Image (cartoon, rainbow, N blue to C red):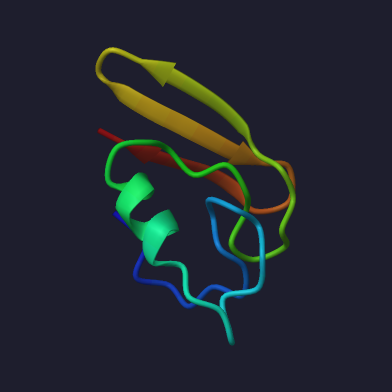
Length: 66
């Protein structure tokens, strides 16, 4: 599930959100963690465990999910 916070970049493909369709990214994000920071486009360190996942941006912190 995407965060409710306004983002500039797609957290799956890293491309700008404005002006492009990210329907495939939204569908994929139902099953997988984000790969890019939605604020700065940096590639995040992602760890997947049986109970969920964590994705860490060095600039904007950590996201968690199930």
